[in-house]
Amino acid sequence: MKSFREQLFAYIQKKYKTAPESLWRRYPGYAVFRHADNQKWFALVMDVPGNKLGLETKEIVDILNVKIADPFLADILVQQEGFFRGYHISKGNWISILLNGAVRFDEICKWLEEGYMSTASAKTKQALRPAKEWIIPANPAYYDVEAAFSKENEIDWKQGRGIKTGDTVFLYVAAPVSAILYKCRVTKTDIPFRFNNEEVHMKSIMRIKLLKRYKRDQFTFAVLREKYGINAVRGPRGIPESLSEDLK
Image (cartoon, rainbow, N blue to C red; front, side, top):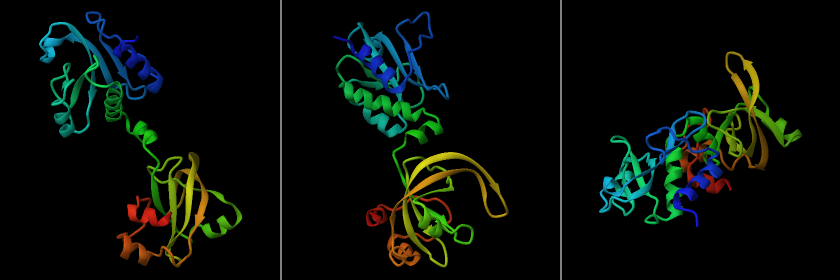
C-alpha cells in the first residue's frame, strides 16, 4: 500500500503536471512543487521529527506545507488535529498538515488546491476560475448587433477584460433600445485584432454564440435599475444573482 507521501506525489503530478524538486542536499526528504509560470512554490513536503511540531514523539513524520490565503481560516485550521503553523516559515499564512492519516486524504487535497490557487499567477487564476456571467454593452451607433444576429448565430465581439471562453454574456443594447436583448456563450477568446479610433480601441476580440433572445420590454434599463439596482452599463460587469435567475 502506498504511503500518504507517495499518494500525494502521484496526485500532484497527475493534477498539476509538476514533479517534485529536491533543492537541499542536506534534506533529501524535502520536496518542493512549484508553478510553471511564476515559479512560486505551492507545496513543500518535508520529513521532520514529530517533537518539532509539538508532538510527543521524536519519530520522523511527513508533512505538507501549503499557503492559506485567508489568515482567519489559517487560525481556525491550526486548532484542528493534524494541522500546525507552517514549520518551514515563521511568517505568512503557511500551515503544515500531517501526512499520517490524522487528516483524510481528500481533505489534504482540498487544502493543497487552496495553496495552489493562493500562490498562482493572475493568468492561472483567470484560466482556472469557474464560468461567469456578464452584462456587456452594445452601442448600435457603432455596430448593428441586431442585424448581425439576424444573419448569423455566432459573431465576433470586442473582448472585455476578464472574460474567458465558456463565460455567458448578456448583450445590453444601448439607446434607443436600452435593454438586454441577447444571451450568448463565449466560444473563443484572445483572437488577435487591431482597431483604433477616437472611440474604440481593440487588441483582441472574442467569438460569441447566440443562445437566447429577449423581448425589448423585458429587461429594459428602467427594469434593471428599479428591480436589480443596476444604474449603468458602461463596460463588462457581473450581474446580481436575482437577475441571473430571471434571465434564465
